[in-house]
Length: 484
Image 1 (cartoon, rainbow, N blue to C red):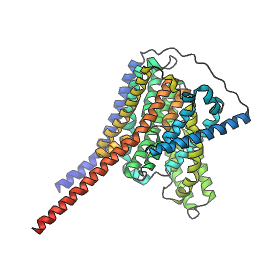
Image 2: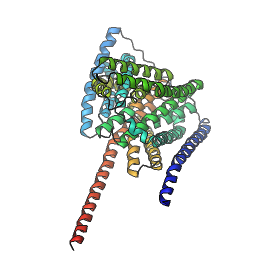
Image 3: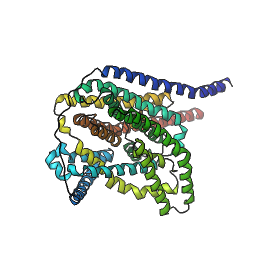
Image 4: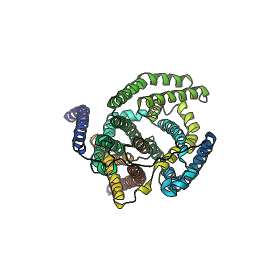
């Protein structure tokens, strides 16, 4: 009886200990960043580089033709590379990202690249790319089992924020040596450090979802927790990015509006959006092929995306928040996914990879020291994301193996990282050279995920086989003793 009582008392104290630890983690992170900032503001960045502006002009019909050519080229090369990478047990998305870089100026040079991906198509590819990302996030959300996520909501919240705060602080610390070399004098250290922290802490939610699908982990406890950590962590990272953008524009009030607006939007979706959506699904549950239900859900998706974009946390999180409220076992989920998936992943999403490839200039990393810096960025990003996730998962009750799997999965970057990097490049917070380094970091950390995950799964299978062998030997030994 005393043992049961002690166990119940320990279970009742656990949420309090987690809450206290969570608060201390947030407080320590704020103090650490302020200390980094106080020293970083004394550093001086080089003057603004006078880069030559390239103007691109094209008539409407000519632009449409060039957009079609660009899409055809990126789809052909992307699909070929995706199959190649799938043969070596890598996520197909790696091949699609590399296709954009290979067709960009890094490999072909500015003149040859302009024949396939001219600068005039960039704005139009950008619109297609953003639509593709929003719809893909919607498809990904249909796979989320919210019932499993609720079972470890507390652990998911702590783990996701630890996986953000540790790499965020390491990124801010890394900004100290990078700012005098790779920033410019029109960018303050604070905005540069904030952006580096955000860029280091992002997890590519869509890429993670594709990896989980490839390994048949989407509906497992670990898979659902990884998706939940990535979703919660990326919303936090987008709020931090909004603060970074607000500081860069010297509009801190705008950043505060984003954070408050995000909280209000989430509360509205949970309190009003969820019951309305469930009523709509029940209303047409007997008509799974109803075009009316599909149309209403698409309209709701667009409204959620519009609201999130207007707030400043990016449309993709509005799409994900909406679709997370749709039961994944419902008829609505089963009919929507196959209707959208092929068009989105084959036609729309590659436009984003083409756009990023146009902006990535690996040829800028000509000096050996730049490659050393790039390697340091990859190392810091990997250790920060894995270490923060691993420690938090262990402290919230996960086993060492499960914590290592979570840390490995959270290291996937790619799509979300590229979105953040493009924002930083547009605002000139980072230079084209640093942009290329960060793109390489996103690719490297994502490529490492699959082999490490396979190694961890192989170790699990080996342990299970050893356990079965031990049980077999034990049973055999017991049988012999019984016969004697």
